[in-house]
Length: 259
Ligand code: PEP
Image (tube, rainbow, N blue to C red; front, side, top):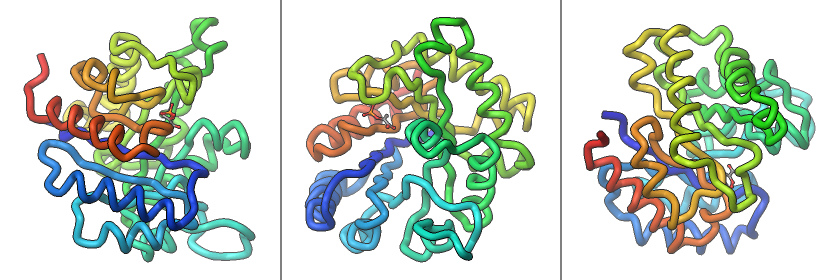
């Protein structure tokens, strides 16, 4: 059975003081998570402070992106070894906001993913189609292209350590989530591709999270879907009680056998 993961992506929100309060509230509410792994991804500016708040807690620290080079003349960038040095264990790569706003290509995303793994971070490779791509029937083609390019040059053994997040762009921050059936179809497709790229066994062990307007009200039905192994949560992760409720519900799905 795959242990579900719930990741809070705080995006570009909060002062250091606010991040400390949010992390402290989550830490205090989730002392011994059972059947679920919990990760928070604060902005870079708050990573050190949140690392301090979470010291000794089972809640793990992640970052929202990284540069693909370990060091060098890359003004404004942060590398994977720098994140590891701060206590990060996870990093998001290929989030649709970065693909769109920064113009991150699949090739760069692949370099980031490999850099993350080389420095002991778990990469969360985000894939997902736009509304227009879905309307035109290109959902599977889009995510397949993103997955194949994102995992290029990654060995079968390394693939088992990658976490995938299916995040339909039309569901991010809109309040409209994919239905469990819609998400389940894409997750199943991605798992099939992983079987081909690595092996059936490796594919069965990879966690595939769903992201896009996950809330306490819809998380149960999403994580009850056998192919959904947790959630990447944006907006709702900024509210400690709401995020904690999502974690608890995902944990129940993690301990209850899915059909
Ligand atoms: C995200 O940005 O990864 C995300 C899932 O956002 P939201 O939950 O706000 O839709």
